[in-house]
Every structure is written in structure tokens, then in C-alpha cells.
Image 1: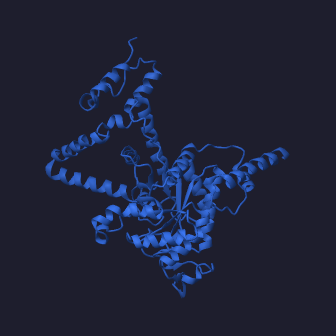
Image 2: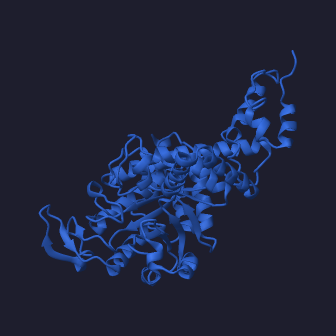
Image 3: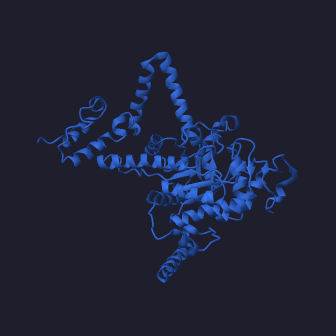
Length: 447
């Protein structure tokens, strides 16, 4: 026992020193000690390589002075195409998981109706797809200059319960390889999409406990996860309790039949909550109802007046009717102006949902009336995209058929006679000539 106590003490001293000296932790408050973290770690240390590497990479990108743009992915294939096209990070939306990617196999609205393990499972799925793309590129020598393991920013919604639920969800996110996770200050049991009505806020102090729980989980895991705090106070009109004095300026005496307090929504409330969350989060996000640069500037200035270096995030949401609110010129410069205000992470939450559905409807509509002409039109579009780096026209190679042919050859000592890509339709009709020469190199050896 004496030896264990000594180890805990020494590791706690090292951890405390890191918190005090590393620039990464400047401005981050922890209402717990390094020794408490070490005691919760256990004797077996699991290395969460993808989460750790992703968190470090994302923080580097966010600290570079340029804003990071991301799209919401629903599938592994979408994640791969995002990276191949040049995006540096990927967003994983709980809305999209609820709609079409949850472990219950159901279609749900964004109200935390799906099983809590759903988002971690999709994080793992996206990372598996990116890792396969990396393996294919490495083994073939094509695309090795691409950093395939783009950091994933994942949606933890309102934590699916109390502080312990938030702790366990954060742990699951890290184990699946998430680089960053965001939580929102709504009541988990009444959680709504930020662009729906009926949102119920929890007291400021209660949400701070959620953030502390998430940070503690990351510290216990030994990963510098990027923690994002979202407030829905700009539009939410309900509050569970007026117990926190920080909430009283925005609380009325009126109550609903469920017992919730009516509150005054608005930018002042959002700023007040953002300032309260800032010491416990790496990044702040104010959920908005419209794409409004003046509103975004007011929030940024309100936060930066007290926390000048605090990073901000902005949801460039498909829930907005963009052209109804903004002209083409403003839309074109919208993200650049946000970046100048300090919004370093800008993302389109439901990009995967809309891209998938719009493209499939377009194909199905054409196919129902034109037959194969419609599909060939899609194939021609794929051929044209190849000049820009697109490779999924050759779908067999895209998912790793050639990679597993190489695995087979290694297993059989080069004498395998069942290679899949060699002699395939794809090789004959789609693969470039230089690939044929490569395939000759791994032809089965004669007995």
C-alpha cells in the first residue's frame, strides 16, 4: 500500500506540473486535484491513440489563427470523402445519429430518444473508415501525403442524464476515438434540437458540473480532449429551477404546469452563461436561430471582454434559410468574418443528411423516368471528379479489395490463387494502366 501511495503521489505531481505549465491548459479551471484524477485511473493504463492524436491535432488547428471548417458526416464513406476533398476535421451530429445512424435502428427527431451508446458507435465507425483509407493509401503508395485520421468533434447532447452519465459518455467518446466533445445546457430528459421549441435549461451551476464531469473523464483517460460548452439560452424560454443566483436576472415568477420557470431568452442570457462556462470549457458555442453576424459579434465581444483568448464555435446550420436572411455577397464572406471574431470552429451540422438525401432523390427521380441514362449521368460526374482527386468510382478498390489481396499474398507467401481484384470487372474497365502493372507484381507464384 505504501508503494501504491508513493506512485500516486509522484504521478499526481507530474500531472499538476503539466496543468500549471503547458500552454494547452492556460485558462482551464479544475475544481479537483491531480491526486484525485490519478486515484481514479487504476493501475492499468490504456492508450487511447486516436482520441489523443486527434485532440492534439485539433487543438493545433484551432490555435493556428485560421478557422477550421467541418461538415457533419453520417457514414464512414462520407468521412473519407470529406478528408479526401481537403477538410481537416469532421463533425458528428447527434441530430443525424438520431435521424438515421443510431444503434436502435430507428428514425428519431433530435430529442435524445436514441440509445446513449449510439454516437460513440458512429465515432468508431467513422474512425474505422478513415483508418482503412489510411491503410489503403499506405500499402499502395497513393495518397500517403493525406492525414486521413481527421479529428472528430462529437455531439454528447445534454449528457443523457446527470454528471455521472456525462462522465461515462465522455469516457465512451474517448474510447471510440473522438477528439472533441460538446455538451449543451438543456435538461437531458427534455432535450430538443437547438432549432425546436420547448427547450428547458438547467441551472448554470448544474451545467458546470456536467462540464467538470466531462473534463474529469478526459483527465482520467489521459487525453487532452477539446471540451465544448453550448448554451441554448438565446432562444430557450424554460428553466428547471431558479436556485442559481446567476440565473435570477433572466427568470420570471411564472411557472408552467410542469413546474418549470419561464425565463427571458436573448443574447444577454447567452453571454452570461457563456462567461460562467468559459473557465471549464475550451470552446464556447451559442446556438442561434438565424445566421446573424451582428448577433455573433455581440456574443464574441461579450465573452472576449472577460476571456479574450477563449475559442468560439458557430453552427452554420441547414435549419437556416440562408438566402432568406442574407445576400450572396454576405454568404460568401460570412465564415471569414466569423473567423475574425474568434469563431475558430465552424461547421454544418446536417451536411451528411442533406447531401445523402438530395443526391439519392435526384438519382431516383431520374432513374424512374430515364432508366440507365440517369445512372450513367452520375457515373460521368464521378469520372469528371477524378481530376480533382475523387476515387470512389472504383468502388472495389475504395473499400480495400486490393489491400486484402495484399494481405492474402502475405499469408500465402505470394502463392495465393484467389485474388479478388485481379481479373475483376473493375480492373478491366476502371483501373488505370499503372495499376495493372502493380497487380502483376502480386500475381500468385507458381507452385
